[in-house]
Image (spheres, helix red, strand yellow):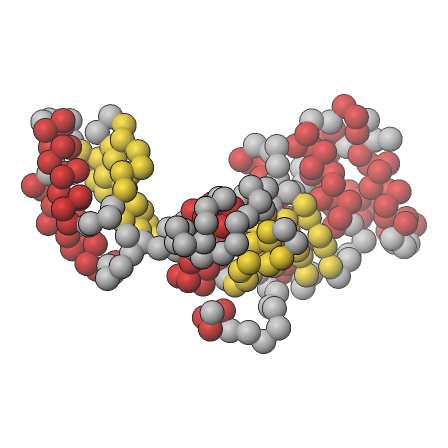
Length: 261
């Protein structure tokens, strides 16, 4: 069967009146930019295009609840953004959408509620920002030293970070650029930026970037097989294939306030 024939079949299964099927299928093909290969056999489609077709099947027929499993896997960045836009339109129309994904970028782009499930149990549930605040420990610092006097200034800056932020961990160093994890105890955004602004001129920093710990870091903390007493997130040992289950942006989970923990 071709992609178009597949969508027509599912439209009939879902009870769309025959006179509306053609326009309904054309609309979803247009939304996902699938016209070019809509009349080609599905077995000839690329992996990313098969993902698009799967999403189209899930969306056709105006269902109230939609489940998507790894919807953007195998897609190039442009196709991924296009898919997210289509899912976003479905959300705006009042659909409830549950997404299972390994992509933290996808979860942050589409979801207001996110859960991490391990061994069949939810380990956390809340908005992305709530999970960052509750389970994220510290900050991520990236800094680049100017070329002139680079090596000497870089070594001095590394010594400065070790002294100023006890417990900091150098995670990456490459061509004058360093990436640190700074512990979060007694550190505020203002304090970190104030310290780095003062250090910028002294240590020839071309630029620096301070971020809160990312969802990716939190996910890896949950998924890594570290005993509870050693991690920043004290949970049971997780399976490495744990995946976050996302509740998208116009959905709520009971009456719980995301800021209440």
